[in-house]
Amino acid sequence: MKSYILLAMLWLTHITVAFSQENETHDITEEHQEVKSNSEGINPHQVRDELILTFGGYLETFYSHNFNKPSNNLNALRGFDFINNSLTVGNFVLATDAKYNNFSMRLAINVGMTPSQFYKQEPTTSASYQIPSLNSSTWNLIQEAVVNYDFEKVKGLSLQMGIMATPIGIEGLPSFQSWESSSTNPAIHKKDYRENWNFSRSNAFIHVPDYHSGIRLLYSPTPKSTYSFYLINGQNMVTDNNNSKTMSFSYLWTPNPKVHFSALYMGGNERPRDYQIENTWRHIFDFHTRFNLTKNIVIMAQVLPGAETSALGTNKFLISALYLKYQTSQKNYVAFRYEHLLEKVARGHSSNFLETFNENNEAGLYGFTTTYSHTLVPNHLMLRLEHRYDYGTQNWFFEGELQSSGNEKNPFITNTDKQNTLSFSLVGWF
Image (cartoon, rainbow, N blue to C red; front, side, top):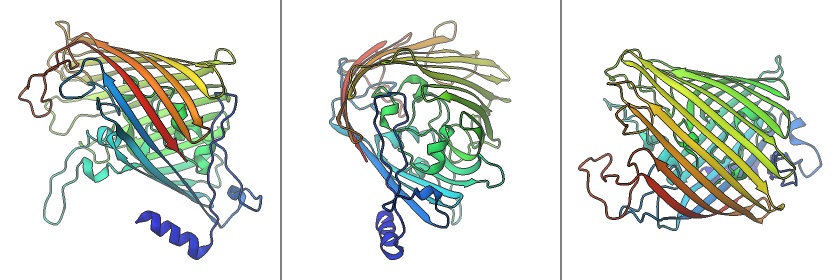
């Protein structure tokens, strides 16, 4: 219905529509996006008092084979590729960007496995007279919904509010953002499918927030530096689950298109209001960088240390990922990723990420991933083949015929400490 309304607007008002087209180049670290001018050769972002609409979208399909052959057909501890032995759709996204003078707005709608995964932590609110209950199904069609205002008197300063992708980490949800603010301000996390070098998402992505709901201020005093401030409900929370808010500060430095460095702090109470332990506060520090080692080799790295303090003590965790991409030709590359998640839990406290621990209340999750990517149609269609090996210090994975746990939340008993998967992915976008 929304698509028909937008088409009617175009027909009735004859407004200019600018389609964004990703521009693939030989420089593998260059941004894959440019703003096209309209049919008269005028850059639409230089025109005042005119509404500019931009459309985009993508469809992600895949097949995953788990060599453990679990009877429940699940890849344990995985993000958006958790279904085994099925030719299926991971995510289908349609996005619309609108800009009028210094106001802009973005709406990205998604359906599939991906939104069901990252909205699963949403709290359920109680219903009352004439007020319905809210839960994950209320929001899971939304990938992003943001309004933006660019201050005219302070160049480089923007105010935004809505549901937005997290600033944490290198990997992200492909969004194909095309509005003017995102094309000039990397802090908004402009991503397309090629910016994630691997098909599967790392533990550094899955075990930290995917999205936030709240307000953010973005300030870019120069094209090379961006500062941001977030005031949000919490990590992966459209509806807040307690009486406090979470804050975040970050700095992004991009001295040239081939290098970036980001530093971030995020802190707040992430436990529900009925949590029995008092004075909890989760601290997250995120540092990541990307740079060219040679003409054909690019390296990325992320380190995310953190802690959650409480009346019982301190939970500690460290998430790290190292990436290397070798460009064999303009259309082909091979990417490698190593990752680990280490966690230590205070006695009597519940964990932040992992489920079971050794006698010292410590646990570790590790992974090695190799991905081959081939562009079938430049700027529109990509094929990926990937092998991934995960292992842990505890039996967190499934293998063979599984036994029932009797637990509604986790109905099957995990029975092995490792997992091997082979995946095939075909993604198209416009």
